[in-house]
Image (cartoon, rainbow, N blue to C red):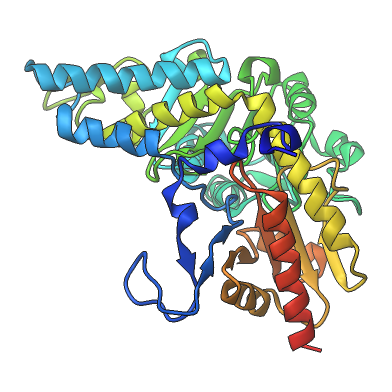
Length: 425
């Protein structure tokens, strides 16, 4: 059976675009990108943290640096104009990808965390106060949980958490209880980076709007892996990162409804975000530039544009189908062992990751042993410490999948887990 027949996408052709997948790991680390003897072919299953980057994305970044490297919105010369066009077109491409109205609703940041902080500081500090509430969930990434927690401490607002049920899903009855007339913001993750849960974000957004509140969706694990339509979700804000979707590090996206962004004050001040400056006062540039102070991440924006083109060529519905296939396969393989506890919904009802623990083996030890077999996974609390407390464990191992992963690599994961089990008795 060919790769094309056994998967929703042509994994073999895709893997050819990722030179890093041809390297080996293990043994004693010498210099970056090189290992000593006794190495094995890399099995990269840490895509929830950072995906790998294909040749076309790297080439687009190189083309920028070799061909038209210049600052944007500052020069009359040709290179600056070419760079400005490419940077602005990257906004347009992102808007098209998530079905936003236009570039005015797309703000480039460093990552999802900065997008979250931008809204929390620029909107939250101005709008929240005693008697108000921010509703979030028990499965939030620290980027959301800690940010809103600290903003509520500063403003006197109350933060409340929608509970997670025994199946790793949000308790919607509890959500309905918490979201009330005091609520000003509901902030939730689209796909949990620990449980793999795909949350009903459109439904919860509607609940927020019914009481006059805004809704913020953390899409860091969603946009890379499935079609996302911000108009259909109707969230007021939506954030994600380029480095989890084949793009470079250092670029994130904040989508915001234009009218809301217009009403907000800038988060950072400086060059490129101003229209007129006097010694007495300043006025701001149009959207989205008023939120992009200073020299922006131009090369990263070019890379993000190329990454979106790459994913669109595959088709996001196909990306989602491949992820779900691998997640279900991994869930089933790991579930065959009675001493493995898997967190979150069943394998046919989750995003492309599986977090688990093996009885008697700490997640950090497991990850270390798997590294000896060249299998790269994440181990720890995955920036969800309170959720792990709720689950009754300090840490978990997490395997997360993407377009270049295969069933054979999941088999290698399970075999390495078996070796760890034997080592620890």
